[in-house]
Length: 319
Image (cartoon, rainbow, N blue to C red; front, side, top):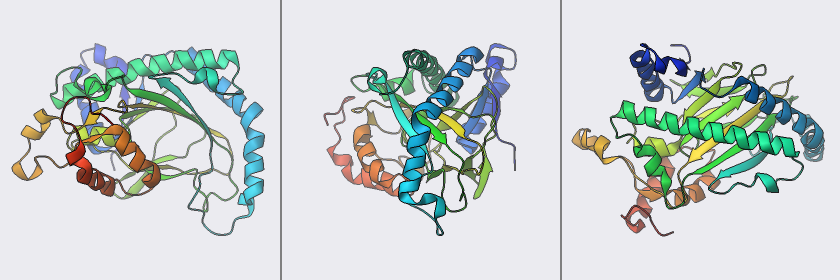
């Protein structure tokens, strides 16, 4: 099997730009995942985010997680658990409105650093969307506009820790799923592994690398690209030792954004592939996804097709 795609974004500013764009195109078409190095986010900022995230877990969340494990008897399970994940998480919203000031137990310095990190990730996500536009032959800004809705994109970070697990064969860190949203940027632990994606019916490790950002395609980009780029099943395997940090930032369409295959891409398709995907309001998709996250995505797309007649054809739908 070809090796996991690792892309040096700095090379876009050199004579290697065409080859780098081709790498990104291949990763989007054949993997749904790739790992960025030299992506423009400062190493010092990433180091600070990592230290503060790990300190916050130790100080505020580790004991709570241990109490939950004890209360549910998870350290002594004998059969596979398929209705929960071995993770400790909280969620930060950045756009359209930040909730960072409302999350309890966060120190002020941590709030400030996470705001700065989110701003850098937002810029990177929008840069990547334009690179995808270029590869797809869409006008610059098309994907950002498609995500915009009436209030701009939804953007947030799931801050997770995956503590050591005594029974990793029976409890997943995070069960297999595709991501519902747009483009996902992950800053993950560089020492403790666990993230895997499904490629050609085999689970492949996403290599932990210091200061890298892992990027993956969400369901909405699959729809907009009419299946040219696909969201991919992935999971987290719990480890018996080491605590794995994961900060997954989701750059998603606005709640009232109407999502549908880009007409320019549909036109290029043979008749039988003209429009394989439905048209829907992003918020409606998220309501459906909430109950079906760990199931196949195809029935979700089919369910949205049945709702399609209710979607307003104007750029902004009323929900």
